[in-house]
Amino acid sequence: MLSLEMTHRMNASHVGTCLSMADILAVLYAGVARVDPARPDWSDRDRLILSKGHGAAALYAVLARVGFFDEARLESFCGDGSLLMGHASHQVPGVEFSTGSLGHGLSLACGTALAALRQASRRRSFVILSDGECDEGSTWEAALFAPHHRLENLIAIIDYNGLQSFGRIGDVLGLEPFADKWRAFGWRVLEIDGHDHCQIRAALDSVPDDEGRPTVVIARTVKGKGVSFMENALEWHYRAADEDQLRRALAELGSQA
Amino acid sequence: MRTAFIDMLTAEAGRDKSLFLLTADLGFSVLERFRDACPDRFLNVGIAEQNMIGVAAGLAHSGFTVFAYSLVNFATLRCFEQIRNDVCNHDLPVRIVGVGGGMVYSTQGYTHHGLEDIGVMRTLPGMVVLAPGDPHEAAEATRLLCTDRRPAYLRLGKSGERRIHASSVNFEIGRAITVAEGRDCTLISTGCMLAYALDIADRLRADHSVHARVLSMHTIKPIDVDAVTAAARETGAVITVEEHSVGSGLGSVVGDLIATHGLGPVAFTKFGTPDGYRSGAGTHDHLRGLMGNLEDVVIDLLRRKGATQRGTRLLP
Image 1 (cartoon, rainbow over the protein chains, first blue to last red):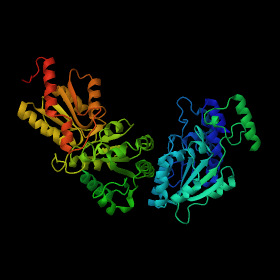
Image 2: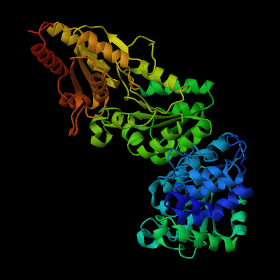
Image 3: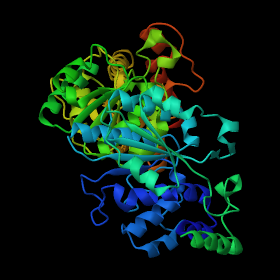
Image 4: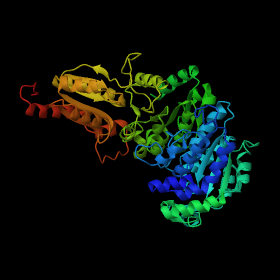
């Protein structure tokens, strides 16, 4: 709901993607990830990387809600001089890496996961990818790397909402059989409903893997989830809600809360 | 130079447990000594340069100082955006190490000739760009990069480069080294062209009684402003010498500096590969020959300068 207001205020893009992964972020930060908002630089914290950096509004909202910074700062989202830019920025407390160009995050997470193993730390690396960024070859370079080096402390979560920038995944560049691809690369694969908090929680709590594999959670989601006129509609990758749409959207989400 | 690099890095890694070396599957007969000495801080990531830089950034973010090694073009051009977004934007201590600067992999052809790497690396925010002129400089550059925290690009040659300096050299990042004194013009050289520039300086003196100052400009960014301005003011003629495209390398940096620092009339030209240059097959000497003759370029510049500036020392 905060993301809706933030994007509405500055007529910003990407509200659909914020809604598709809002449940994943909420579960991740509400008890799964070992982070301390009072100590964002705590060395043994889990590392959370939003590879799909265009979902920044949702990430900032969650970070503010759990206490990394004052929620009032969300009002500056995309504003002149604000640190809260439209793609994830590491200048914001709680954000590990700036992202926005797709296909970077899984490699970064491989690096932080490898570092933890070499430093004998139990910290885990979580990375949230979009389905669309699995078009990027760099994603698959990292997908080869992680199982080879037995990065059991790495968890990739794919927000599989089925829509990319200019069309449906299956029409633009098909990913199926998606789970089989990851299995073939050597990953432990979990397929869940990405809006079911119990399933999300169970999946994210199931690492590290006993067999030393990295884990990929393919989370089936709905772009624009919870707002009837935004669900599965490509235009909400770009549009922001006007006053009337915002009121209706908040009412729909409020009734579900 | 590769040997000087890896010997120094291996020695430093014995003392500093934060040093990590990644390679994108290159370094046969070079990197083994580091791998054997520090196996827990060495990784061959495979032929995947984009992933190498992302992994390097993740390691550096977690406390390591990371050297990422490959051929010049693979280490810079293939993964340029990862260097920009993942390394530079986060000010991480990742050192991109490119071997084969210029056309030292001569017979391998166009794909293996690094002629734009300085140009692209120097555009990146906060990036230190180093191209040492001999093995001693390469060793010192490596040593300093073990403690410097800035993102950096280290452009190396290959092997067999002539040693210019004595056993040690006073090497500071951002401070050019005066290798030969002279008052008639200055050859500002970067990378492996240093030995060639010195040879040309000898010929200029012998053939034309022209005394050329020779600088090893091992740091392209941040450039040594004082050394360039002193060269311009004191010798009146500056020639940059690089095995790199003249459209974006050292020559462009020095030209900008001369133009923006109010240095008055300075004769200036750039020696390197012109835009549109397509290196073909052949030995390194053959390919360098296609760049032209530096001695002729210098004499031509000084003649033109003499034609427009009365009262200066004129060539016959």
